[in-house]
Image 1 (cartoon, rainbow, N blue to C red):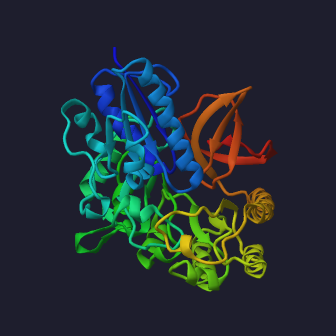
Image 2 (image 1 turned 90 degrees about the vertical axis):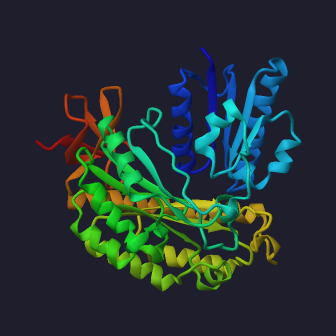
Length: 427
């Protein structure tokens, strides 16, 4: 039996695409093995969001090349955002068999068997490349990609150059994918895209319309959204939230920086007051909502004064946790040429300050949930030492003592335990 190994870096979009890529190999009776094992085919699904992910992608590529040095019959395939932006550099590293562009990942198995033109300028892509899968590689919840590309071109971000213009998946294909996964016993669905809120179809069919249709599918218990830009929480989407019986009260919203001067400089599409107003609107619908926020430290021109503006803004904002990133210079972006580049020590110091704030906000949120005691729901992910664990719809880790139950459950809060909350099944 032939073996295939794949390693995936970066976002959940890449993870979904890797699951889809592997489906074709599974259908051809390939054995899926860990990337460090001997294999006939090695696939690197790369990322270029930071210098660190570039390095990791190159390192995995070199490991695959070392296997090929031992066995010349090994095939090496590279795809993803790093290879999209650095194809010439990658081709010089060694005997790479295929470099596949981001809009042709669904054809990787076909290219391996038959050859063909597998790399083009992603900015020429006009149609969503359809990928589908039957499973999520041992994941409890199903991630479904419904949008690709971005037309915003934030000054610090290379992803639009690696993913191309915004393209949306056809309604019927999304619904067919959800139905297929629901039939395979997935009950929780996370919908994502490179810029999810840009999802559009003909006749003004929007993300909200799609979610209303998904909610009708038998077997769907929980719906989550991946990261969505603050200005794209449209009136239609908020109206869906008010009517939905399945949307999780948990949203991840990229702020990036909490001062208007840098928001404008980085070509963001909102100011801080609009961001906080949007959170207020969401909180009116879901009083106990979990709000996660992306923040970048060390953007070019971020003086100590401007960082203090971000810190003060976040201290006064009602949110649940932060994802803190250090700015990474990306060639070809406007920010890479800007004055006022920030040193690594300063970025680390600022990152530590925001991480400490995030920890305090998370503990405050857990205390709030313990006080308000809403009914939580979720799907058991694992069992250990007599406890089952769930990432609840409110994005709090919950624990219950082992017992027989259906996969999707509603839970009553008992009290604080470990890093989250102890619960019991609501019967």
